[in-house]
Length: 310
Image (cartoon, rainbow, N blue to C red):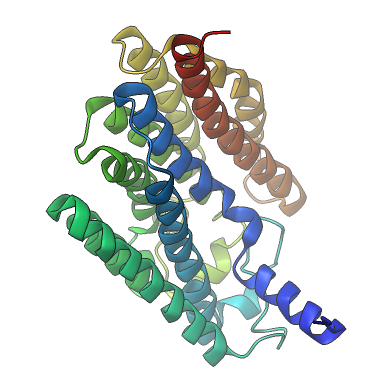
């Protein structure tokens, strides 16, 4: 089968639309839920793991596609200054994809994610159903309701926590305090990113009626929330180690602190200059990816050193 340039272009455009480079946050969250189940309970089901990744990624793609659709309907995409980290994908205003196709794709991925979730409900019970209903409802109403009531950032934080808890629950059939603490850490990391990336969209969001934290509190006050979230995430990591809820090896995640501090200090100084904000978003996003990845690697390292004889 020969893949024509037209097909390649379409694939590339859809890759932009589903924001493939941002799927890493979801992948890391699922991986952390799975690895803590292996470390704490010695449980690992390859099939459940693959299905969890597929289901959660489908829901992630859905919320991004539906966000692009509703942003185009509200005219937000036409007023934002697009960067690598903010302002939407631009596939609809640039007429690379029509809005109906994006809407249908968003709904399709939502249904796929929901169906995978229903499968896990049949094998793991009502706890998965509660998480699934929260996730699918929040995904569908994220761009139309949640962001209009100032709940968008809270949803992203809860989503990060729920992904870890859900991934752990799928593997083990129950929820443990270690998974809860790890979920809270991942949720805080996720919230710090989404809040930071909302700064460049301040004017466009405000004109459209959105109520992000930046709009509700103002840029100066919101900039002070990031160090609280980042500091709290590091504090919980340390406390989890002290109380033996996570292995000492997760302290390796503290190596992301210099990157976080670089972004935080710059944000406290400047909230309006777009060039500076791009660098700030880069640093906070990098901090989040490195911290989440090092948490996973730290737990994996402890498991391997305690269960594999050389």
